[in-house]
Length: 418
Image (cartoon, rainbow, N blue to C red; front, side, top):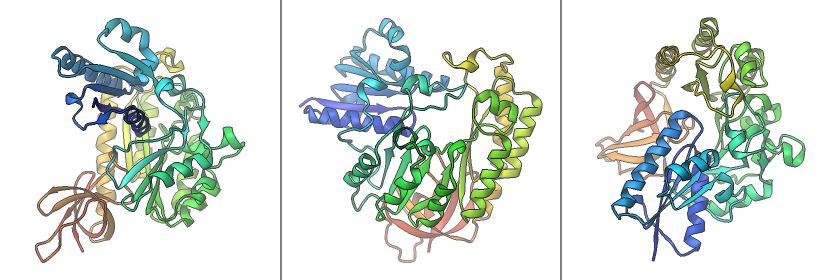
């Protein structure tokens, strides 16, 4: 039997595509093995969103080409965003690749099947493909096309197909969750979808909710539905009105501040994750200082900070006022340092509190790693859970435990089983 290995790079949306690709190969008689370097065929599902992601994808392909030269693997398939953007160049520069397939060749909006490669207790479900926002710095709409919602029935069917007792957490993903349904039903339908989801799933989490399309109905559903995590991934990218306009974000500073205030007022205990970009074209010292004040004042529970990546085929590539790499790095370091201080302050509030923690992995004897409702897999903080010597039985990965928080780290918490 031929074997296949998968290297999935980039975001969870790519991971879902990888799972669908693996399911297709298993139907063709391939056996999936964990260690890709020992497989007959290796698929690398690439990311090409920003420069660092492109570099990671290319380095991985070069490693696989070397393994093929050594005779350790037989065929290499490169799929995803990189060949979607650069297939002609890749074919010329890397003739050792056997098959290229961009996102529109291998990836289906409604996959027939998925072979889950996440741990058994959580999974991602993609509710749409593509994006209509066309932010000036972003290449996603060029790579993945126009926004296309999956039908509510298709999403619910997939969730019910993958749901088992061991599955505790569903993470809904999309390039823009809050736009869901507009193309299909002529209205924002995320709240409607959430109300219809399986109530037996303990945690339902929303990843990437564009602030321009956040409705009061959605806020009420998050507030009043017991198994929707009081957590929102709300990427705002900047707070200066000038930069927001240049970015094409379709929201103003006033809109963003009002939405954050409304979320915190209406959903007690909500954890807001956001992302910001420093060094965008036109960003002056004044704009950056405004952003720093925003970070300090708002105190996001979770925050990712990125430097602007100048991508060809985007309007921002040709904007005047490009910021030097040196200034971008300096601003990134300054913003990260501030957020570290904010994170310490936020985490300090948890000392002595009892939190429900989902156990993700066993680290060593007596120490496990888990997450609270305020932490998405892979991107947010963790809880290091210690099991005392006073007769506690070992914890099970995928189970929930009550933990008393005893200490904090930079972005993580430390606690003991109650």
